Length: 404
Image (cartoon, rainbow, N blue to C red; front, side):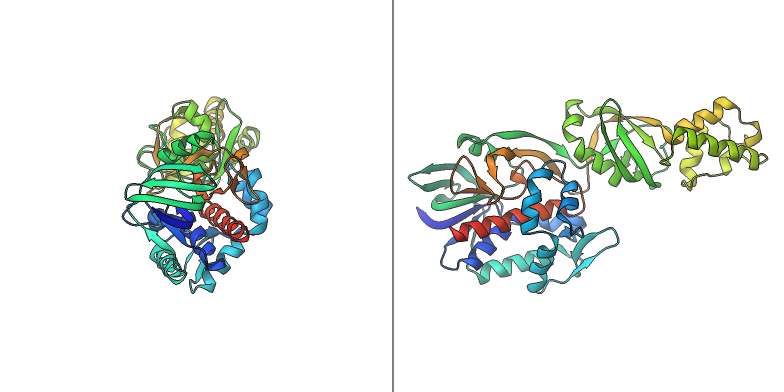
């Protein structure tokens, strides 16, 4: 049996961050990371297309929490303790320069996730964190104020355990055995598969600011929309997939969305097109792009309104005009499945949040058991927010473990 003071289960972002900060703040404690893989920090490596989107330039806690479909209320207090500015300072104090991009995402100046990985490995070595790879956790038991952990390579015991295993169903099963409740995991952050003539053959076209809602549910989002070979993507779709993850799963990924490509009301759009009919009377509708829409998208919507390529504004009748208004402001698309967002895959689900003390991230059910990262039923939209949750939870865990 190997004895440690603190064992962190999971060698990902939150696991390393917790272990490093614990070891730094309490050098007398023997800290170990148990990682089931041959290497750790796999998600860090692929995040942001290999650049690692460390966090997001949102510095007001009440606004930052709005990016979390699950966890918004619970994270407000923790973000007052450790949030974006603290994350940036932590990395920069360790020689990792960061850049804020125009959209608010924050990356290492090197544009390489390896910079973050090297920082963590260096800090772990500096503070004598024992990193044990290829150690898959088999059992986790708590008796006589000690945790006993059986792994694929031996038996460990520790006074306290931090679980930072992300969306790992086997670990959730072990935690259920300790009395915790697990919200069923469903995908979040995915693109929509749509087979529709209106978006066929125009991949790469971006509508800069649209409204999207799910029909039959009070769920919507806004932002850029990207037309792809298989359907739709970009922030408007990804945000909706996150906030509506549970509802979409209930519908087995078969549902309808309504897209307002111009963010104008039906009535205002109708008035604008009636004006165009007067001032552009001799011009072809097909070639007279309106509302700053991408030309190829405008042309697809014109054809969908049953207006021919040669049709002039003067010749468009009331039925055609109203049909075009509907295509611009109330276009309905059938979603027929999902696909993942690049290499990143986020799930909604995890340990029930009412079973966690968010002042410490300690279990209310099992004293001495702590959680950080996506093992909890917390998830965020794309843009560095999931990592910020990981850093915040892990740091607060380290603060409380080393105080007690």
